[in-house]
Image (cartoon, rainbow, N blue to C red):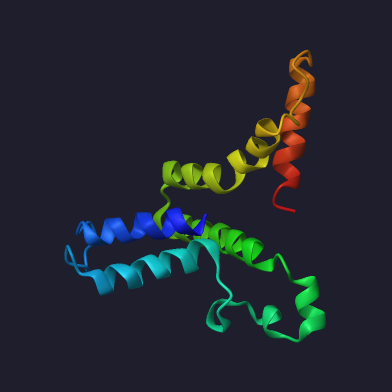
Length: 137
């Protein structure tokens, strides 16, 4: 996941598709790509860890998967904060679809853990709502 994110950000910067980076500026493109990975995937660097992840081995044992969920929480928080300022409902709905609504059901559908094909509409709706409600928890 990190490699496509890094490569996409790097190519975008190298092509000059960013305001503050000139086309072909490799050092700036590398910095931008590194930042894109840190912001979207998390990293193990001390500066990128939440406070709870900086404790000793016992605490680290319980926060093994914290990075992903920390990034997910920050995406929710950033989306909500941006919506409070811009009131751009279509953008808010689109971002929530990408960070909440789609991931909540896509994995189960891909792994064939969705509702049975012969399930009626009410059962499918109940499955869908259960997934949507429990995903952020």
